[in-house]
Length: 388
Ligand code: GAF
Image (tube, rainbow, N blue to C red; front, side, top):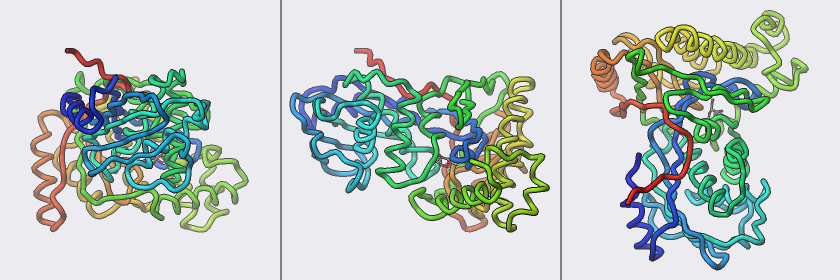
């Protein structure tokens, strides 16, 4: 967990006095279930041991002051000026949450302003949901400080709304749900249609498996075109097939579906439909056999994202291939694609071999040196109990 002392000092230096508390929001990896969330489908992410942390103190007036230790300067505004338009840069995330809380029952005309300082060790632009980490930390902080009484599912919708409307990224509900609903050593099995969520034990330690992240350092941004165009293709596919969402199509329908769609749209649809099935199969295998059994499903998911959804990159493909060749049980791109990270399930005694193998392969290919680290499944966002 991020130490709170440096953030406390940063807060005091800028605003004077101590914050009234610290709230942490974890990033996430997605074990499987990619580009299914906005199709009302199934996902299986988990919260990771990388966090955004918010230090917050309410004020007696309506002013909002925000600062982060990764961008210079203090952003100052007031609750009277909070709206969905005109926000940009890093402060769009916390201010977007303020606006979205207003949409979910907070009476922004009658609440006090606040001072807020943020730090984070979730890599930005790597597909590990640095934005959801901020949204959930800030959402939890304001929910408590303003005594709003919103539950975690609602706070996930608040974060998604901030991201969709204020930041302008047409993302689904997966990342915020993982960040808010995570549990130690568990993944979050979320039905994005009903929003029913269940935690599924991963049993990584018992199986002697680590989850390695390979950050290709190819940056992605979901407010850009690729993500939105995949979403549009899925919506077009559903429209042509006459179903509300691709969740309503099953693997058994695919032969018939192929005759109704052009090749590209069919492949986009096939990715989503087969990925939903892979999530179900992964959950079943985790429950009955443990994580050693899910490698082939992770590999199939990667192939589907590479070939059918076409959102992989040469770096992501190399990382998955080399990880497998050096002993990973399975490997796949995690998150929205077009860059970002790969996850690999690796037996503990193969971690060094996989790490060295990937580094060497990237150097030989002339790719930027990747970041490689392990992640552990942790609890969802919450207040950090600071011991004196
Ligand atoms: C990004 C989005 F934010 C998620 O909602 C999800 O669609 C994911 O890409 C792809 O599975 O992380």
